[in-house]
Each structure stands twice: as structure tokens, then as C-alpha cells.
Image (cartoon, rainbow, N blue to C red):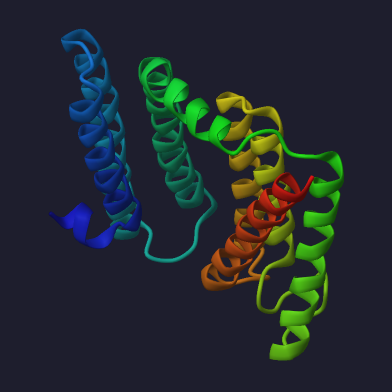
Length: 218
């Protein structure tokens, strides 16, 4: 209860657990696959609780800043990251054969898009970002403000790659890369989460609409 109440990442892990459990029900995985997923999930939750315990002990022993205290906390957090990566790999290996074919069918519904449409969609996204930043008088074209231009362009490219390749794995990797680009802007405190979400939405929606228009009138 303490970890769930005080640790944001613990709450995120619980939400991810619910999503995986619902997917397990919907996809009807085998008992062995469910057992492996359950062990992976429990390892992440246990690692997060150990991390919370380490942080509490370090704060008790060293209330002020100390290099060793930082090492203890960073190492415990690193253990959670490693467990999370392991769980993600396990989830992909088990769920991919159920999810990827269906995702591929969804991508195939959009048909093949043109090279010209891809270029035009990215350019339109850049123009829209500049217009919105000018209208809101926030940031510069490449730094800060509403929306995040990096997130908009990253998700525009990821959407275009997904619709051009129709390959579920390439699509997921492209979206993951776009998410990492957007997250870096958040970590650098250049943008807020709201600005990033607005940028990602603009990039994805405009690209999807423009590519479908090119497909209709090609």
C-alpha cells in the first residue's frame, strides 16, 4: 500500500499489469505462457518494492546528500529497469504471435501510401507546428512552446513508416523511437507532458489524414 501510494512507477506497473491480464484473457494464451507472464510481472513488482525499501533506508541513514546514497538509489532503480526490460521481452515473445498479425491487418486496411504523400504530410506537420506556436506565442520552431515540434515530427514519421511498410514490428519500433524522442524533451524539461501529447497527436493525425487523401485522389 505504501509503495502504491508514494511511488508513481508502482502505479504505472499496476496499470501495465491490468492491461497485460486483460490481453491474456482476450487472446486466450496457454497456461504455460500465462505462468511466464505472471512471473515476469511479479519480478517487476518485487523489484519496485525493494527499490522503495532501499530508498526509505537510505533516507533514514543519510537524510542529506551523499555520493554513496545516490549510488544505492540509482542501483536499486537500475534493478527495476532491468526487471522491466526482461518483462517487456517476455511479453513480446509470448504476445507477439497473437497481437502482431491483427495489428498487421489493421495497417493493411489503410492500403499503400505514396512517397509524395509522406513528404507532404511531414512538411504540413512542420508548418502546423510553427503556426500553432506563433498563435500561442510560445517557444521557437525548434525549442519549447505548444506543441512539441520534435514529438510532432517524430510521430509523423513513425505513422508514415507504419503505413508504408505494413510491418507490425517495424511500426512498433518506429513508434517506440518516436516515444523516446518525445520523452527526451520531457527529461530535458523543454516541454511538458501536455505539450508532448499535443505534438504527438498533431503529427499522427495530420499524417494519417494527408496520406489517406493522397490515396483517395491518386
